[in-house]
Image (spheres, rainbow, N blue to C red):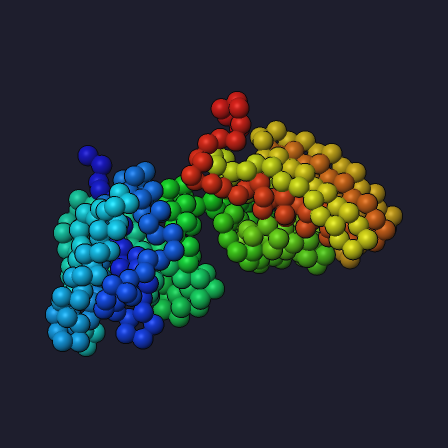
Length: 377
């Protein structure tokens, strides 16, 4: 039999808004749902097979500082609203202790969750969803991964301080993104390509934030590849050791092949993507890049350069770059650049490519179909 999977969901700050001073919702006037949570919890309940478990610390519940009656009113209304939207919870676990009590039942302790740790649950493929580092730590203690409801920038700082980066599968402040991740998974690809001429490592995350870490040995090429990551919103790491003592050819061409392969792998079956994209002006230039991740490579190239080099890269290599990228990513590329300034033309092409990629890879899990009448892409 298949093991069960669970989502262990924090309450305050994750399902409902947490008041900034008291951190506890004491009355119905304060009850406010996190944006998007109702729609997305309904989708998760309807489409996915996770058990839904609320796990919450409620400091001093039942004491004069946090009366049970106040809590019950808010909790009852919250559960009633969720139920009216088709969302019921399989279990609700509440720890009423204070932090200084040091009880094993208090998150990130797992004392309330022992029934989930007996082997019936696939914890490696279950998740803790929460807005605090204690939720991430709970995931680690349980043997789960965490979904950290927090801006990616803030999450990165907090997670690295506590060494919890590997436990966190996703950091986002959007419930739409959480659902997309749970429903359709990561779109991350790693490509290692080693030949006698080049040694290339690429990591691509289509659903990133435009973070780049690029080093090819060619400064201008680095600058162009950074445009792809930055303006497409993809996280892109490119590390290349090439035979630059011979010339730039192998470094540029092999990087294109590996990068195209990374896009092809990360896109997977391409369900739900927009598939197409296009165009950009830059100063004196008009650069249009129309692309189609349709599974068939083709390059149309209409760009003339009158300088042999821009920076440390020969201008003739850009045709090779885009031809290899198109072949390897299995995409149509139609590129046109007009203008006088060669640097601007090339940079405009890379930026237009990036914006086209951003449009084409956009995914809608609520319309999770293949963008093709053929039934295959």
